[in-house]
Amino acid sequence: MPNDRGFPMRILAIEPAGFKGHKKFNAYFLRCLRGIGKVTFVAPSDYLTSCDVDTRADIPESLLRHNSKFGARWSAIRVLDYILKNIRLDDYDAIVFLAYETISFSLRWPKGRKTFLFEHNNIEDALGSVVKTFFYKHISANCTHLTLLNHSAQYIQNAYRRSAVYIPHPYYRAGVSDSGIPIEPISPPNLSSHKIKIFSPSTSTPQSVQGELKKYVTTTNGKYHAIFKGNITAKGEDWETSPFFKNYENLMQSCDRVFLGACFEYRVSGVAYEALSYGKIIAHLDSPFARELMKDYPHLLFPIKAVSDISELSIDPEKMDEDHRQYLIDHSFLSICEKIRSILT
Image 1 (cartoon, rainbow, N blue to C red):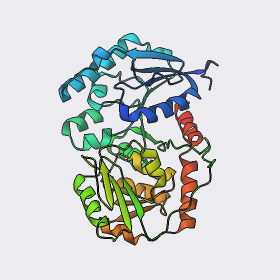
Image 2 (cartoon, rainbow, N blue to C red):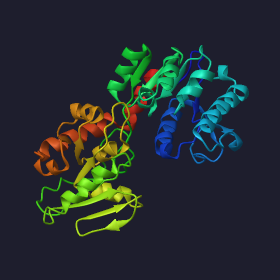
Image 3 (spheres, rainbow, N blue to C red):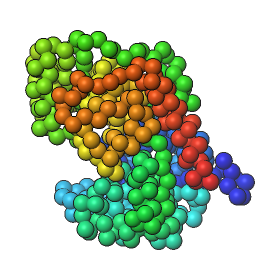
């Protein structure tokens, strides 16, 4: 995409902290930005080194070292100071922060500089802190906030009077084209009444709720088998738990139900998007995040008040398939890239 001078658009993409949990997300959007223009990627020197970008600008490791919350914030300030000192921002047509820390960004980033900010936990963090709310309000009006939930964009517009645009959350599964068309056959849901596999891998689901899931499946005479995130590795006849899953993708692909027990308001669950990409039935305790997804995919998401309600889901395989195929298109690579292109240009 050429800029107004007829040259390829020059994009500065910044990942100031090198979040390990954002690697797939960042690699996805770097690929998207690469399709729009020439990308310079600013990140820690050992972060996503194999990504295909035009230029890299490494953040020195010494700036990232810290051992406290205060140290982390001071580190974030130093990183921004380093970027402002060593990178000529006027050389770029668009500046995109793939993530940012609220207080340091509010304090250091030039107020007159048009910038695009991907929102992750920033809004939810601000709601729980008077200090962060203050600094969030003072982020420049020249920034456009890119949110992964539509109601998050609406909240920023109404509460902070700032520009905000909804970007669909990507999925990373194989077997689907860039346009969202399945390359491999889609497996029908398991409607058997025996050994239905429930996968509950979210770190955000409270351990007390995971415990309720474990207790419930042991009372169902073998109808359910639960695999859930826990603090230790252990196994029973109808359940198993682990602090991490090496075969996560296989478990997601082979399970029959996904359980979400966290209450998110303005942040999202990557587990939910991965489950939707495989067309999984999601049983969730009520939350604004889940209600938002239900508006578009009502035959894949089922609100429950208690873990035991997971046995009362009214499932329509044909409608599920329709919702699944629509989700793959709505959140496809080409759909998301077109949205990003329209915002940046």
